[in-house]
Each structure stands twice: as structure tokens, then as C-alpha cells.
Length: 196
Length: 151
Image (cartoon, rainbow over the protein chains, first blue to last red):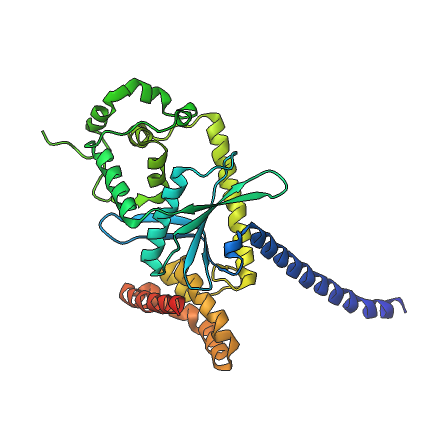
């Protein structure tokens, strides 16, 4: 009698557990979608998530390799970039604009898609919203090419590196002692032959 | 005397994150090239926090993409040949998107997908032995991925 009753409710229990597992998974995925959707700015509400943490490479003599945090495809077919920054203050720095502009060139060259001039930087914020989204205008391809060229010239020691525009950049810099020691003669130090 | 360059012949690629450092401080770019990266304990802790936050951000993005129909998903995928040809690249994601958006919605497409899964591992074994065939496959699939992305 006992065995008969068990044989009746055991398949029922198994089905109930399976249904619960499926429902749980559906809810979990829905929760993830909603969380991702809440991170989007208004301009990307109708966009499709195109890539997550994907690496792209530009063409040319001096290619740029960029890892894009998220890229969204708008209904118009154009792509918008989003970058996560985990700094304590909600502020967009020039380095963010340069990084996103370089990402745009790499993505455009590899996928052949057009990327919008506007990109977004996502920065952790305090309550009520977990993230603050800031819009940035990207630099032109020519400006990034010039920057790449300048970087290589700095590496070659033919350009004098500029001091930062803001003093607070130096406050937490790991190279502070070496920078102070090199002084204005840094360009000479770079020219020193290196073994690598 | 000719100046010697700091970079070797294979070091012509510029990473976007390295380029971004130019916006912070050019002297830092040069000094890091000379002495390597130097971080204090606070900066190291911040870097680890950043890596963890990026991992969470990536996971959330991939989970969301698997629901919304984006081509950045990873689960339920068995694209043997595409993975062999491109690895974990955007082309693989785009081809998966094509499978789900076009093939799986049609009777002949489902048959094609089933045949692909049946014979895919065997084809992969052949491709692994022949670099020329693999290059050709990469070329054809890359073209197909581009086409689907633009369509």
C-alpha cells in the first residue's frame, strides 16, 4: 500500500521539480535582461546587444586592438559603444573618449559597420541608481591616427612627452618618483638604448 | 649616431587602453615603457575591483544577450566548425545568431542544423589536419558572417 502511494506521488514530485527548475531559469534570465536593460540610457532602449567583451582590430600600418565592453545595434543599423569604468567619482575623463574612439575605429574596420559619434560611459554611482550613464562625443579617425603616431614617436624618443594638464593626475601616480627624477630631461632618458 | 627604437618589429599593434593613457599623462606612457607598470596597494586593490566589476558586467551582458536575441550569447551553442575556424570571436556569435534567427525557424533549416551537428565533429577532424582547408573555411564563414551582420 505504501509502495503504491509512493509510485503515485514520486512522478508528480519529479514533474513539479522540473517545472520549478524551468520557471526559475526563465525568471533568472528575465531578471538578467531587466538588469541589463536598466543600465541602458534612453537612446539605447530599442537597440539590440551586438557584442559583449569582444575584441576588434583595425586595419592599416599601425593597427589598433580594442576590447569593446558592449556594442549595441540601433534600429537604424548603426552601432553605439558602451564602456564600463569603475572609478569612485562620476566623471568622464579624456582617456575614456580616446579609448572609445579607438574602439570605434577597430570595430568599424573589422565589422564594416558604422558607429555613431555618440558613445556612453557607465560609472558605478550611489543610490538610487546603481550606475550613472554619461554620453561622450567621439574623436575623429584622423585625430586618433595622429595620437597613435604621436605615441610611437614618444616611444622612439623623438617627441618630448607633455606634462599632464591637471596636477591631481600626479597625486596617485606610481611613476611619481621616476618622473620627478627625470625632470624635464625625460626625452633624453627615453633615447637611452634599451635591451628587450 | 642612429637612435635605437624601443619597439621591436612585431610590436606595431597599439591597444586602445594604452592609447587612452595618452589622455592621462604622456610622461606616464614613456615612464611605463621604460620601467614597467608600478602600482601602490590602493591602485592594485582598485584594479582588482575593476576586474571583478568587469567580469560581473560581462556575465550580465551575456545572460541578457541570450534572452534578447542578440548575437553575443554563449549558451546552448555547438558551432563546431565556426569555433574551430575563429575561436571565441564575433564571427562565431554572428553565425550562431544566423542559426537561431533563420535556420531554426524553418523546416529545412532545422534539418540542416541537425546534419551539421551530426557531421560537424568529423568535419572538424578533417579541418584540423589540413591548414589550407581551414583557411578556406575561415574565409567562407567570415564572408557569410559579414553578410549576415550587414543584412
